[in-house]
Each structure stands twice: as structure tokens, then as C-alpha cells.
Length: 216
Image 1 (spheres, rainbow, N blue to C red):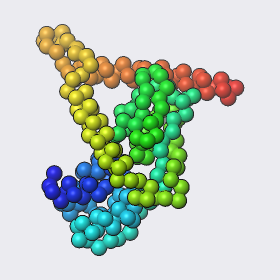
Image 2: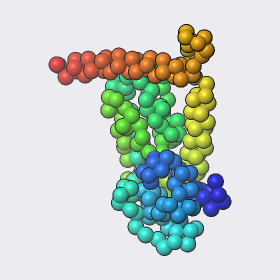
Image 3: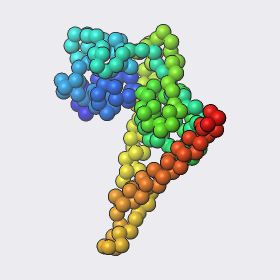
């Protein structure tokens, strides 16, 4: 990462929400430094964030581009533990490891760690996660602190390192009977199939519980 990109990244809120159109805050910072993205694509940073980026890059401040969302108060994810099926998909989706839980057990959000990215919402197959506002009347950097941004950035780095390690060290190695070799890809496929089966079973149980709760 260039020096300019690193300085830009340091001014971003580190929510890792992808709303800017890039995979993370570092990617957005690199795009700004390369003049491939505008400084007004970060809803969590809001108007104050745009002003910071403008001062650093020498560009004129401009309104937040509505194509990337709107500035608003910070929210955190809340899991309805009664309906959580323990599928672990939200754990995989959370970029800062702010969700704790075990397979087939209820999960919970560690509120101080949640950046409000909302990436867990579409990942949940039973819609048991909602976002709740925690900074009413305050948005952008008025709803987020430098210390929180630094902590989120550190947790994101740990999350990425863990995901990379998991990717190169599959949980199981499957023998290829035809060649007598082993295949990491086959191991990953088996792991994914087991997870899919577990999720389908949990979903069936959740539907049954909801049916009983509604009297159906």
C-alpha cells in the first residue's frame, strides 16, 4: 500500500461495511489514492469523513454520493437468540469477529465490537438479526471514535489472518481413490456439504418451531 493510501485508510472509520463499493476500507483507500474512487463514497464516515479526506487529498469537499447510501446514526446487530439456529453463517460474514457462538448453538453479538456493517443480515437464513440504533441524533464521526476505528481495524486484520489460515489448512483431507493422492479441494467440498446439510436440518427445526409458535 502506498503512503498516501495508508494515510487515507487511517481516516476511514474501519467498519469494513463494503458500502463504498470495495471489499474493505483498505481497498477503498487504495482506489482513492489511485484516483479510481471519489472521496464521497463512505456513508459511515459521513460529511465529516469526506471533509477529512478532502483536506488530505486536496480535493474539494462534496456531498455524500447517494448511490452508496446515506449518512445516519450508528447501529449494532442484535440476534433474536430464540430463533437462532446456530448455522454459523453470520460468524463467517462478520468482518471483525463481533459474533460469538458454536455450531447448532445460539449466537450473540459482542456489542462493543460491532461496527454496524450489517453484513450479517443477508447471511442469516432465518432472518433473526436486526440492526438497532445506538447513537440517536449522532452520525458519521460523531457516532464513532478514533479508538473504535483502530480497534475495528485490528480485529479485521485478525479475522483476515484466520480466514487465510483456514483456507490453506482444510479441516479434512480426502483421499482420491483413483490416484491415491489427497485433495484439499475435495476436503473443502465435503466440509461445505456437511455444513449445508446441518443448516438444512436446523432450518427445518426452526420452521417447525415457528409453526408451533403460530399455532399452525
